[in-house]
Each structure stands twice: as C-alpha cells, then as structure tokens.
Image (cartoon, rainbow, N blue to C red; front, side):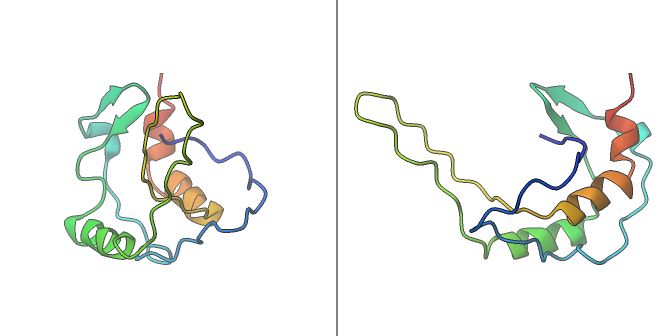
Length: 109
C-alpha cells in the first residue's frame, strides 16, 4: 500500500536501511496519468512504473535481504504466515513520492 509520508516514524532496531539500486539515481520520467492502473482493495497497480533494468536491479538487491516472518499465534488461534520484506527508509519513500508522479496520480479525485 502506498501512502503519503507524514514524517519519519521513530527508528526501530532491526529494520534495515534501504541501500538499493535507485537510492541515489534520478527517477525515470514517465507520464503516469496516461498509464492504465487498477485499484483493488487499496493496492494500486502501475504497469511499467520502472524500466525493466531498474526493476531487475531491485529484484537482485532484495533477493539478498532477510525475510521477516509473522510471529506465531497462541494455541487455538489460526496461523497466518506472511513472509515479507520490511525496509525503513524515509528518504527513499519521500523521493519516490515527490520525485515521481505518484503523488499527482494517487491524489486525483
């Protein structure tokens, strides 16, 4: 889920900082307003948001990161396992929101 950064939350230990491929590179310029997108339960799909090469760089970078696993539930409760990546990097999130067209496209009425 994408959301507008409202300020950096307090730093929590154990959260890796983003050092991925696009952390210091300029963002690609595309017209997101003309890109088809679908919304399904707060998930926004933007095809071709990043060029294939940048996407592949991110996949390669993230494949080396540790997955965070959902803690076990107490006995008698259902167990749901969600392995996920969790990266805390407010500067990266801010750049993604402000230096691309995301804020314009996602805040349209």
